[in-house]
Image (cartoon, rainbow over all chains, first blue to last red; front, top):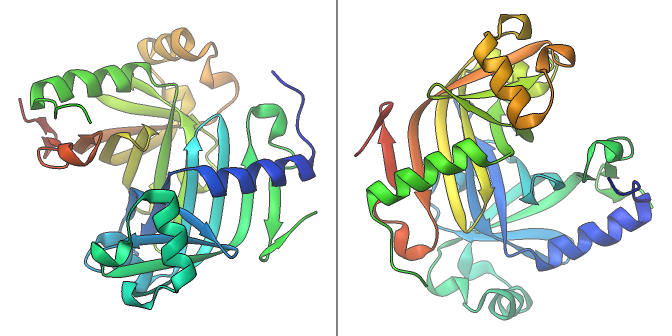
Length: 146
Length: 146
């Protein structure tokens, strides 16, 4: 097992994961049951941005209860983001967001999705193995703990 | 992109993932917000079995609302299990379950966890890329669609 990383190293690694991971697991709820699905991720201007259809359970849940919980990739290199989702029409994407999405994912979401979910991170946790459970909190109340 | 797999091939692959994946993402809810955390997975006798502390949000949520949604590993080799969770004390583990856990994960959960969550799968979906979205339903009402 590797030595535990410092907080600042975990923040660097976590931002890199947010920038580079293609997909994320998005958990939401309508208050009657949990929902969990993978969506393409764009990290833009401090937010996680997901394009989807407004009729999907994730979009519908985010309208009902805006708190979501997002996990990146690997269960042994965990990044968990608790955040507040805001949903709008995909026509509302800024030019910068659409260009960022196009560069990362090779498509303009306005051509295939009618909704965009922007998640403002509130708490971020990251750990690899058990020896990193201590110190796993990297963001609290929307601020990185640098 | 590879050709889409047949239903029977997906079932074989999915059971292999259930047997061999070390961890799973477990989504649950207390009706006010979603929860999502990675837990060590044991597939035993048609159930997903997780050991954890009874004080964790996942255990507490499963007591409140037994429906959970579990995802295995990769966002481009998706296995999603919707199931009904039953929670009991870890002392309630059968000898077979404890032996299976020991063999797979190298520990007896009765020594470090006070609760066990058994998830009976109700629906299972599996897909890799977009061309496998059709036909992704592999289990309905607890029965494999062989």
